[in-house]
Amino acid sequence: MPLPLRLRSFGLVLLVLGASLSLSSCSKSDSDASSSLFINFGPGAGYDMRTGNNLPMGQGDETDWKLDGKWNTTEQKLFQSLGLDLNGPVQNPGKIYTAGYPNPAVGAFRFSYSSAQNAPAVRCKVVVVNQVYQSLIEATSPGLSPNQDFQFDISGSSFKRGQLYRVYYVMYSGTTLYHKGHGDIKVEDPH
Image (tube, rainbow, N blue to C red; front, side):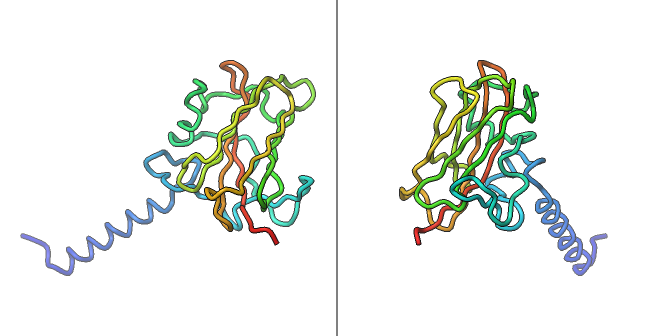
């Protein structure tokens, strides 16, 4: 015997509610390409505020400029040309320091990394993407170095004022992964 219309409608409402709750509970750490069409910049402002001299300024984002855990398929594809296992173990964890500044940025921002004492020289690849993982800038260090500084021009039309952009980076030497992470940059208008 079929269920009365009220019970079927109530069941449908519960099914839709359950599906939406399970989808909204996904986080960056457990997502894969199928559930990560847009970047979640995190709580609050979503970026780590820094001066032009790389000094902290106000609020921070605890997930930015640190060693990342597992990357989803979309993130890994940004670096597939390197041929590295980006979710594999990293060598010398905690011995490479990264920063993006100034943040918010006007016209340009810098990305730098430095290795702690006795850490090996590495090569670095950086990819800057918008909120749908579209690559806007790619750069690779010219050689192995324990310290590197990149400056990126963000004055072009690809960068919209008031928007956040994600900077992904991978440090490696040959087939050895030393560090990978991300940080978010906010683009502002000149005052």
